[in-house]
Length: 495
Ligand SMILES: [Zn+2]
Image (cartoon, rainbow, N blue to C red; front, side, top):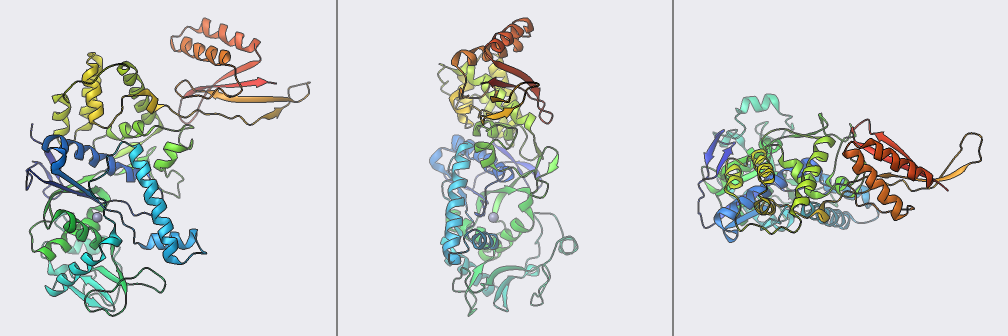
């Protein structure tokens, strides 16, 4: 089945026809490295990783080049560097921030099962190419210099706005246009700007005498051209990048190269919200990948990267995604069940056609997951293992254990009419790789047995085990988390 992809540029699903079947070229906008990646940042990484895997499968791994840039020069980086390392020079502080953030980003994305892109160019390593591109744009009348800035002149391009489907007038009315007196046109955007003293700076293009630094949009145009050529196959990113970032990338690249398109196919993943609300720092619902993987801040447990990946793929990439505890928990439970039946199973030689067909239909991952359920139900476990591996899932329970919820600080509590008693307590979480802190293996085994009895609705047996534990001084309390609806068992042991 041929691959079809929805193209934002033409607003329809089209059969994918590579410029050169021996060399498929894809560019996806990468992170600005100043802070932890949040799950909204992780969505395009996972979506385009799935596409990368499909393209490698169809055309051969050595015939696909995937470029994802790293933006390491930006006002937000400068601000973070000055704030976090006030004692260092700005350039040293920036290096600390960008190195640390980039390493964290790589760790997080690897945990989510994303393959490394073929090339990860850094903006600061391509300043020369950016300068060259700006000089070309000035020479052919698409850009101009004013007050030590280089600006792109949007009215030099008759079909500016084609990607976002908006006319210049609509954009001016709708956008927060930075008003600068030296702009010829309010929609003109910055290609290069002067650096303030102490900020990173490079020799400027266009005969500008003071040192400066590039704007954000020109980075991607220059890096895409350097690694993929003037025109390439697929350009991806989040829907929030359509305007102005991608519109401006297109304007720069087409005018610099004299081409009709920058990339043939433009793909955008939808927005992401958390528990039905827009994710924002001020609402306190800002979820980072690091928090999910390494802390218990989301739902009181750590989460395996594979569960995060699976949860992300349950929604089609173009649809808005609502990130909820219930959905993530369900994703984890599904994988746990599947991985259980895969134990000791080998993999089938070929990826099932049903999986490839669903993916080839504009990355229909909800359909893919329905097909995985079918393989599981039909007992086709070898095919299930192969399909999961192809999609970036290990199939091993050891890799998807959740963190245990443990409150092991000793606390003194007063029991009516008795002297204060030292209590150790914790939560028994059947899915977690629990440490048996301060409990004997025997007690832990009884708790697991009680959990199993409750699952089977054998409440008589569950009560009998509760009494047995109680006789050992271990008091159980079943609690429903009011937010998540999840039932966990708290235990306390009087000492
Ligand atoms: Zn970009």
